[in-house]
Image (cartoon, one colour):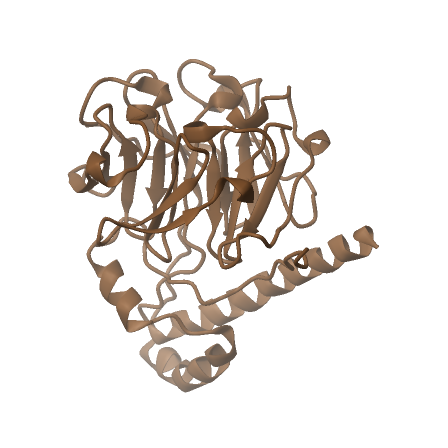
Length: 338
């Protein structure tokens, strides 16, 4: 069996501002604009003097925002750090689905993607509320799940992963609307879930997390589907056993998996250290309590876009601090495993 993945904190992620121009993503991917951590010190040294001379202020880090659908056809949100109500989204196309509508936010492109009753996956521009790109239903394999189609998005590779009734997960390139890969059913642990499988992507460590029928969270490498990643055993998951129908989302800002709980709250856990994180209490959510079936998604941006040279130094220092935290957590987890 292949060795288990060691989770690392990787810095070569894109740093677009939340709510930005959705069209910029393709050109930046094609240009390969992400700089590895090893190059950042040289970049920073080359721009520190210029940044200080210009007196430019560093851009603020965009927050993690947890979005959730409600029965009134309004998607609401909560700012994770402050627990304050965030932006709302409405104007969905197709039949009413309410709190059962599956959604995914791509904060990097400023889009909220959602399933529709006719089988399309459409999007709304978060900043303006206008309609964004659409992926037609003809692109998707398997039975039409309508507004309940389960999918997740990797904003850094611009790929969409959706669950299929044959228990596979298909991968679509959003820009070209073409299928680029299939994750076979035997990559997943537990019983057959089909089109209702819940997944979430950790773009930093190239992992796909999913919930299994045994109420545990598992993961595997997006570069080798046979290579297992971190897992969270069911005894560490708060609330009653919801099996594979529990909704989860990964937040790279904090390195936490957030998951819906049967009491209506949303809890979190670090999949590397297995230490519990913060909980968003049930009373923070508007509308009915769907329990562990609450659909959640996260808008996040790890670093600010360095609009000024001084911003590059801030980015470098932030990366260094976050990298140390994740390495410390990984060492603790390895020590505990021994």
